[in-house]
Image 1 (tube, protein in one colour):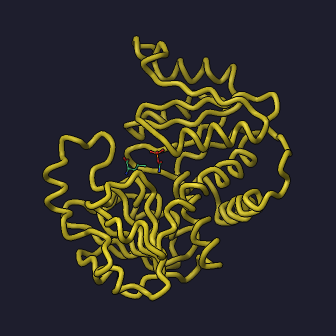
Image 2 (image 1 turned 45 degrees about the vertical axis):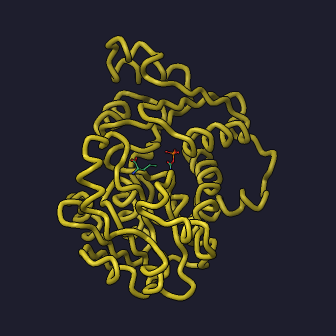
Image 3 (image 1 turned 60 degrees about the horizontal axis):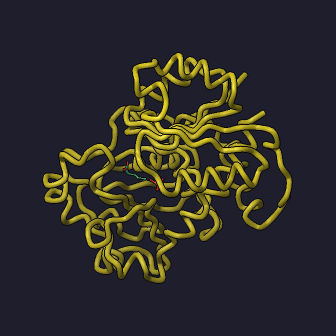
Amino acid sequence: MKRDFITLWDLSAEETDRIIARAIGLKAGRDAGKCPLIGRSIGLLFEKPSTRTRVSFEVGIYQLGGQPIAMNPSELQLGRGETMADTARTLSRYLSAIMMRTHAHATLETFATHATIPVVNGLSDLHHPCQALADLMTIRERKGILKGLKVAFIGDGNNVCNSLIQAAARMDFNLTIATPEGFEPNAEILQGARETAKSEIVVLRDPKEAAGLADVVYTDVWVSMGQEDQTEKKKKKLRDYQINSRLLACAKKDVMVLHCLPAHRGEEITDEVMDGPHSAVFDQAENRLHAQKALLEMLVR
Ligand code: CP
Ligand code: NVA
C-alpha cells in the first residue's frame, strides 16, 4: 500500500519522531553513500515558485541515488487541459513517488486519489508539512526536546501556521498564535488538532502576549503566494506583528527565531533579528534537505 504525506496527520507521533532522529543522523553523516533510491525517479511538480523545496528535494534525491524530475504544469499536457487524474495515472507508471506544490489543496488530494505512488505535499494553500518536519528537527536540534516547549507563531495564520498547529498536537509542544482579526489559521485544522492535543494551542491577538516567555518565536511572510491581490490590506493589518528586538525582549533569553523563508525583511521580520544571535533560519532551511531525505527513505519502497 502506498503512503502519502499530504498533511502532518499522515505520520504518527512515533513515525515523526523517527524521521526527526533519522534526519539528525543523516546530517551527522550517518550512512553517507547509502543509496536507497538507486534506479528510482521521483517527480517534482511545481504550480508555484520555489527555491528551498525544489533544490533540497533535487539534491536529497540525488544523494539517495535517485533521479529527480522537476516539472511545471505549463510544460506538461496539464497546461492544455489533460486532467490531474489522468496525469496522476500516467506519471504513476514511470515514477516511484511525486512531490507537488499546488495552489488549491484539493488538487493534491485529487492527484493522490488517482496516483498509485506516494504523493508528498511540497506546499498547498492549506498545508506545508515538509516545512513542519524541518521545523521540528531544528527545534529538537537546538533545544534538545519538543515536549512542553512554548512556541509562538506571530503574523498571518497561513499554510505554515496550519502545519505548525498539527506539529504541536503531534509532538506535545504548546503553541500560541497571534494574528489580527480575520487572519486566524484554518478553523477546521485548529479544531482537529485541539481534539487530539495534550498540549495547549491558543489563538490570540496580542503579539507581546504570544511572545511572552516563548522558547521559539516563528513568523512567515504576510502575503503568501497566490494572495498578491490582498497585499495592501494584509500589510496594513499585520503592521504591528513584526518580529523585532522589542518583541523578542518579551521571550525567554535563549529564544530561537524561526522563519520558513523566503523573508520580506523589514516587514514580518527585521534584519537585526534575522541576522542576530537568536536566528536559526538558515539551519532551518538546511534541515529541509535532511528531513526530506528521511521522509523519502520511509515512503519510497
Ligand atoms: N520554505 C519554502 O518552502 O521555501 P521555497 O518556497 O523557497 O521552497
Ligand atoms: N506562506 C508562504 C510560505 C512560502 C514557503 C507561501 O505560501 O507563500
